[in-house]
Length: 294
Image (cartoon, rainbow, N blue to C red; front, top):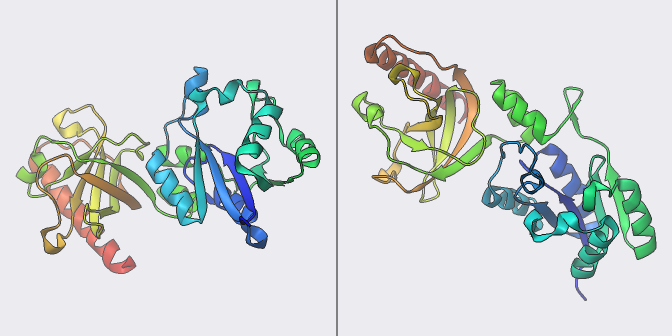
């Protein structure tokens, strides 16, 4: 006999503390958990302004699997948004045979978002599955949400963003060729233009996962390089160590950067020499942070 399954449904962007609570509740009693996540964001299909994502599909899936879930992708482009609410749940139940469905209080589903937790309760009673609607998880007296994390990142409050996530915020991408200015200044960098949201402009203590899988201490600049008049926002990361020469040459290799602490905001310097002096100071702060926090 197949083990009984519970299901969690949502966008699940960020896999933050609120999402983690849904998964933990779903797993109670030893049930196996499936996480059905909408990707891309439904608003992209509805023609509405879409918030910048906190996670790529790959990163979202990875974090969900870490929490023990089997990951299912719900593609809004497949017509699920036009499916009547009751039919959407019946189709999901027929395909995945869950005995418990766990959602948040703000969960809406089906055509015109007419499906509500109350409707889920009715459907559960009729179709034979348990419905649990979790109250909001709160941090600092306010609800944990992906929107709040985005706001914290935009406001340069990395500590709050990481607290709401329950881990360090990360970006993932492939290294692009840059202007080699970092190498000229003695601090070569790997340049990322990730598809996910970047934190507010500034310098950050980071850790970076290299293609071989090892994590190394690093320091990252997010911004537009105002000293040189560049306008495209990017993340430039300098590795503070290179174990066994693990850093590849050139561009095109994957890099994962975890943001640990904010050092300072972005500043326009009067000369490359002034920038170089500040960079050395930033590196010392980053090295000390890594030494203090392991």
